[in-house]
Image (tube, rainbow, N blue to C red):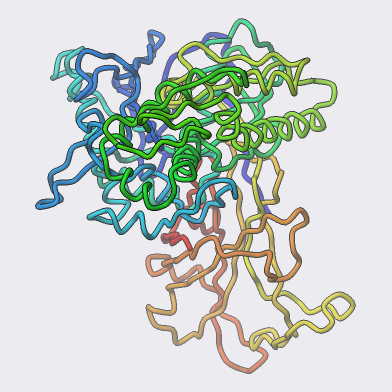
Length: 593
């Protein structure tokens, strides 16, 4: 594997407040020095937000969240419910966000349908992604695009009310979109497709805990110094992501580096709602549950649990809570605390709903702290930052503190908006994550020389050009846990032979990229190796003089084509292109499995 290094531009001691060169972002072209506005979208499982900042080289940008939302008049908050409900007669019309009320039945957690193969914790009630998708009048990507477009257009109106419209129109727009760190590459690609349909393009993807880390680093700038290590736990509605960082530099720019591969799962706070629903079903029985869930009484009870009990529960088993089901006419069950359409829940019953998710999150935090400590034994973790909606839970904070008594657990000010604000900061040159850690192995299957001592028993084939005996092996170009610097690209050299009397179709190649999460990368294609994507390469525009004529072992005339597949890991989503002799040529399209 060959690498290309680019020099870091940190020679000046004076900070300049500029955006990164967007030419590295997906579909973006180079930017000049004109004024621009960064618009960041945090499309969440339960709540979503938008933040923006105007920037030019002479002044420090100020990141501002949108706090006024349609349907939430009279309230200001940096997030809007991620909810959308279509007109059953015309799917072009819909209500979204705060326009929906507790009476409106809609699919919860549409975001999670972008990555339906994510492993769900066993303690969550079973659900079918296909069943949820059937409730939608459109493909999931189109539904997400509709919501994003509505959110973006509303945000533009609010931004335009702060500055002259002509100035806003002149500003070049730089878009950033957050995604969970645990998101599959296919889910990231679907997210990009939705953003493009929404008009939010070209767009840069940033991992949610990375955005949170940048925001936290900015707010804690004077408290953190070079060499300090900390963990960010982004506990949201659908997912929980953890990444640990080391402070690399504070001057002239603020720079962080990932310590160990990030971890996460689907133990977000939406699971509490699902477990509460399961608890009510167990309380009243299946027959009554089928009747209750279609009544307004259930919507009100679920809202009461979500907005009152979830936020107030501290883990005290002596506390009592009341859930009301007004007008439901449920049969009393005094022994279980159900009387006159009210459920008197004990602290133990609420604890039982919380416990599996809390234990999962605490376990993730402990694992991340342990791994980071092993990586930097001389630089212990000094603090754990809790962000996201679920991250504001005092019970979660106290449980993490109990398990990590020598580490300070901090819930930063405005933690609910930390991700969307940090996403905007990620496009500024003075806040950077300079390196990340690979979360799995990435590579290709290739025909390699057969070595009897190690390849005995493997299927073989003779190369018609070289006459050599070959067997199929894995070639890994990114290794799990490997440091991936943002200022360099990964390369893998391909070579193939086509007949000298080739057709245009012979210059269209398909290469499959594979991935593995096994601790040690497999040497051969095994069950532990899974398809990541198909890379379709088009070399029809390449100068044919670059093709080398050879005579094969079979006596036929062949053309040898050699090129580099270049992979950029600068953003949350990988980007691919082809190079001949160090110059970009041809094109490559990734289709995710």
